Image 1 (cartoon, rainbow, N blue to C red):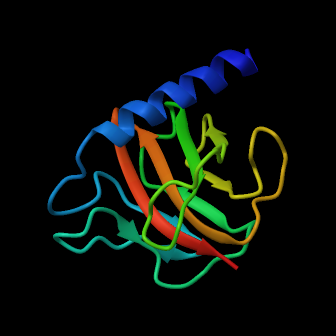
Image 2 (image 1 turned 60 degrees about the horizontal axis):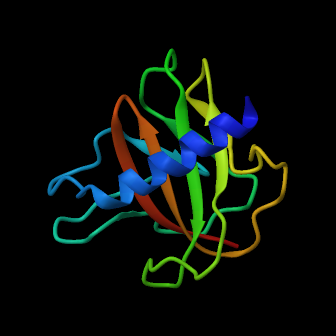
Length: 132
């Protein structure tokens, strides 16, 4: 079952990166470490202003009765994917709250630049952020 979910999350990530971000806002609000992700028109991704800890809480304002898939990808400072980096996957089922420490592989996410891709209700919110 975990393998199937991992494959589903990776396929979803591939599809998500191919889709364009809405030109005006995120499809649903996301907060990490108590900070709401903000989107500025003309930028490719929403951002968190301040760095967060690697166990920061995540809250997604989407229906909790559906699975919420969160992929955390290592990037450079501009948001380009790090070569060969594998995403950390966080699944929220029956809730819209979790933490960055709740990865499927139970590995801590190292300090650095990341993009958070949150898939819920058939939509995606993509957020650049930094872990301190």
